Amino acid sequence: MQTLDNKWAVILIGPPGSGKDTQAELLARELKFVEIKSSKIIEDKFKLADLNDVVINHEKELHASGQLNTREVVDAWIIERIEEVGATGVGLVGNGWPREIEEVEAEMMAVEKFYPKDSVKIVTITLSEDESVKRNSKRRVCEKNGHPIQKEEIVVCPEDGSAIIFRTDDTPETIKKRYQVYMTQTQPVIDFLSKKGYNVITINGEQPIEDVHRDILDKLW
Ligand SMILES: [Zn+2]
Image: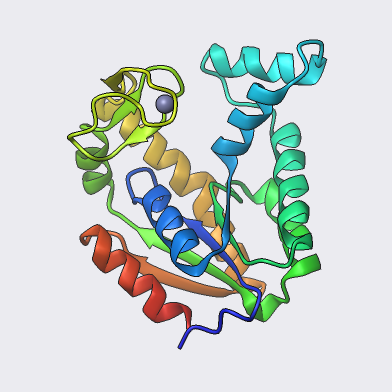
């Protein structure tokens, strides 16, 4: 059923708490695709940056003070990564982009340089606001880099060894606000892509992880 010899781009979009990080990882592993995750790209850029890099230093400061990174800068990084992965001839799983209507055209143009439109699948994972609040209220992350930690038995971050904490910015109010930001900024991206004739697949995110994963695979082909 899985035509792995074809090159696919599967782009996951979903509100906070929809489990898209987990789903992106599962898909990338199962399909042997490369995941392109915006938060990971930013983290890597910070890690590998030359200390004198003015642009990255500015972005680091923004990040450290809790502000959003500059959209144009992050967009350029994402596009650069799409082109790197696309050029290697493997499939990609997109996670965390496009996030806003302002970036969608440039990013999809980069995608389509390597993946024909009928090989691009937009997977949107739905979740109610109540469920988003419920799930995000008990989110654990590592202290150093904020890596999300799902399994309860994990006591130090597998990636950087730092302690596990509850996210301090996860009050019901801030979670609701993030959900609303998603609905006003990212939902229009889905409508836009749908209108442009992309294959948009909608998945009910209010099911166990394995069921969401199976639903995605069932609907991809
Ligand atoms: Zn970590």
